[in-house]
Length: 280
Image (cartoon, rainbow, N blue to C red; front, side):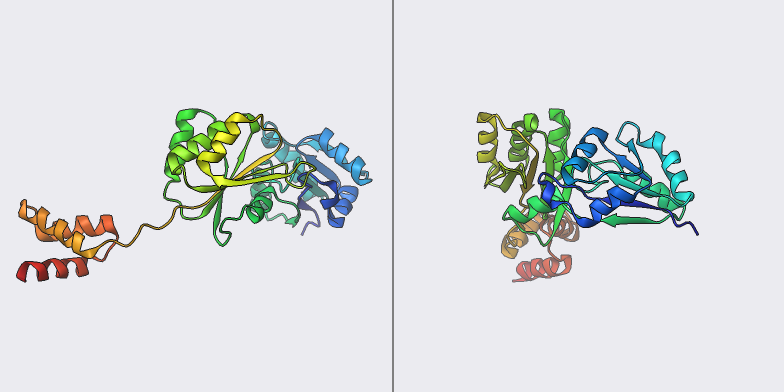
């Protein structure tokens, strides 16, 4: 059994003081450090006062596939490969997923050094429900594709977390307001943990107007409240609709099936209520 392993390590999302002692130890001891941007990683190491003793290799979306064989060979030979992204946890909208899958497929150990996460930090400060949430990453850049992606989320009941680039923020918020509703509660979290951290909480339409008027900069996370459940259907109105459809020639059972499915009510109960109204 190999003693090598892949280690996924979270790096600070802004404030270097958020680096954990385990991250510093991993940076100093790993045989290979696979970094999304080697210059940014070495700059972070200087600020943290740590010097990697192993090789530092670039590992990003454009070369991840080509690096897999090399990195897996290090682990098979008993070495430690440390994977770090520019900020936060690798594999979360960052490189690393392919390596984890490949290592797991071979039965090679994969472990984690937890730490800062822009997703969880934004979720925590947004002031929206946190019991259930979904991370949606970046919305598509093209307007049509973005609108379709938002439309698919219109009924999502969980709180949604998005990443967004500053120059696309206004367009993204406008699409969210159009597709989810102008009054849907949301928060724009900017420069989390940094000097100019800012959290704006408002309905989507207000945030879209703000972003359109401002020259927004920095790292952006958008948190949007989930869809609210529809109010319970009025059974009397549903029965009326069923009987109208039946009077127009539709079989009663077929009318009940259509109306019950749309309203989300039990077919049997609606059928019996319709029969009772007819007999009454």
